[in-house]
Image (cartoon, rainbow, N blue to C red; front, side, top):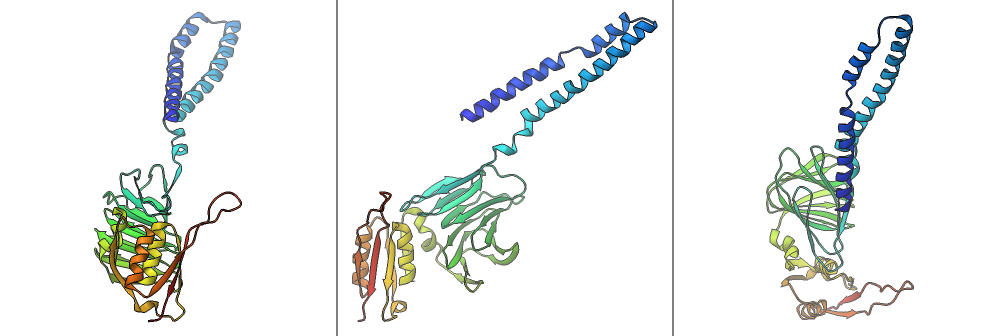
Length: 308
């Protein structure tokens, strides 16, 4: 706020200087000078000298006026556009608005980068993690979300969820229309209720029908699983509660089990107590250790899948 006040004061000061320069009666001075200088060699020489001096003075005055006007009304505009980075604290969901009034929810530990003002005919942001977007409609200025995978989502007025991991990028469309792009080439147009999953290793895109509320309920503080495999369950719990969950599947039977449950205010210990009843697992929650810089290590849960 103080920066904006200082900019306004500077603009007013420059405006006053311009007005003082404009108040100089150059034309009147020129006429007065012309009346006082009569014919004669000596007077002609004086007139010529004064004319040259007036010309020399007029050019800097003009350039100064143009420079002041540029600085006050447009020269610094680009400098005021900065890159903003928002990071959602571990274990929390963060909601905020973009410069175009579009709303964004960031899941635990996720990062969004965007300019302090959208310029030109596009609105571009970069996401690392998981985010839910409610984009303000503007057909003339499409909205782009870029990811580390190189995949981009283009929308005009849409509600959608993007979840990026090291293995894949999942885009779920809840409402409106969206295009999935790779290197500015359209790969797929999504319809509401569809999810596009881009496999980082195979560099392949697959489309499937999903329950959109199951995928987006995290923004409302809920975790919903509908026949979700254990690997997905542990991945989403890890992000939500900011813990490392390590699955020890010695017998390779994790694929046989899935979860159908909804969590909201439960602690991670309560959730695993429930999972222990629903699936043949045992688990251990480690105590965080102190690092040399006085910070604590991330809490870890080891899960062993036992053979029935």
